[in-house]
Length: 220
Image (cartoon, rainbow, N blue to C red; front, side):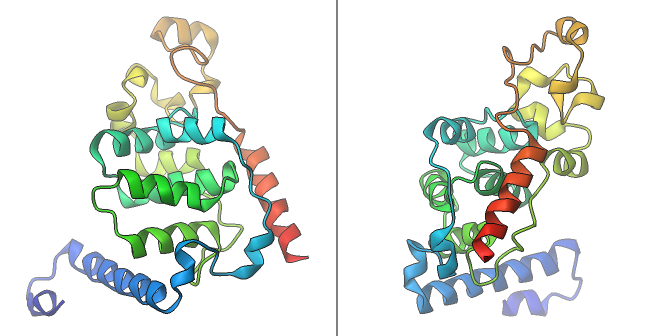
């Protein structure tokens, strides 16, 4: 930290690096003072939350076969390299706990087993933040839209096409929602949805509404 403060020419990554150090210290402080959060919701009201237990959907998430390109690219990058960009970590985590409503501990365990930069405090606090169960939790209604996230952070599809090479011929207009591509174009591009690349395992709007209802029911 001191070395960072001594830098005269503070470039773009400087503030982000300082913020990440602060987040790391915050996470370690949380886990030190609330060691129970490693295995339990910090917010006890979430003990009654209706999580789904679905091994089939969990496995598709782990393998990067959800049908949402930005999610699948992230999960495949994690499997092959043991690393994933922080933005994509939030996207795939939100998809697991809010689109699929699978318990955050399943995601925490998978990251624990696959991340090369695994840090127990950061991992637990991060997953509880996304799930809405932690101390500095994201609002329950904050549900990342994997289509819009892909369009915003990978507009040209460089990241997606690197980790999902079966989508290399995908026209940009269908890059983040390949299921909308007409069948004739699928044949022409040799990208057959449901065969060479999966259909979405859940529909975004339906999953979002279901998650919102489950969170609202928890508040009653």
